[in-house]
Length: 404
Image (cartoon, rainbow, N blue to C red; front, side):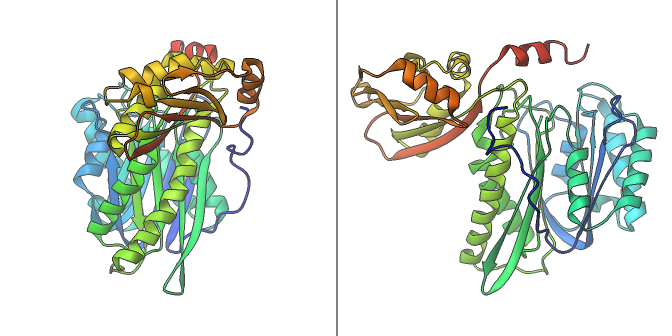
């Protein structure tokens, strides 16, 4: 990867109170890497979830939908290495069994346990290995950063590195904390919402405010990134609040949403930077559209174009690919008022090409940790940003051999 500032560092995480974490190896993965992650709330906590909009979805997604939002959640159990998707009633029963095992260990009702899975689609879970992993994770629970990182490692599949972030913020003179983890490198085109994520906080939220807040957070972060345009069957983001029952004012909740959005955007960018085989990461910023939704649709279309992705990969300032993608995105644009800059260099304005040093700009693109495309499509007030990764031969090679 060539994105040093996007690569996660070993900086410390200040964790919210009331949670314990663990990662364990049950043997689900042939590699022998950790494959069971467990997060436990010491007391009943508020939980909300946002899941994939794919009509083909995994058994754990159905369980999360059925059990959230709720104010009595006690745990989230995740297995990696097997998606438990397209596995029929047996797969649903396996997901229920995972929750029951955790509930027995924690001492709560099975309905108060949420579950996530990630990995290859269409295979039954090896429940003996899953149960072994759950047992080992239960024995390893702790509230230190080491335990938090172990839980983050255990949700990874093709990720090159774990993805974690944290922050603290102040409301009415009191300090609250947020910590989050996610996984994903391929099959990334969330539309909630392969990606999984968990956000934990000690800021007090009700069921309603947690669900509303999470949807706003996801819409501004995880729904603004793409690696390959392929929406997963398992995409899930869960928010847990260990705060005492109650809810803050609109202003206080807005402060929480802002802090949680900053944390989640860091993770969303890491998803794209870690795209399978990716070398470069880029931002598409659109202004002048008729509405924010129009701007988002245009930015998303540009970011998804294979021709734009390959141009980014090669450091090729081929502006025609970018402008033409904006033209077929669907929303109305004003061609005579359209302008484009790449890495701060103007290349197109008022519907006409501008002279620029292509070799110099190519060099800037190749050196940039995050290539920035600034596109103006008219005189409207709509604006949006979207993030994506380039398309490389390594991506094609990796995914052509994924199950063989």
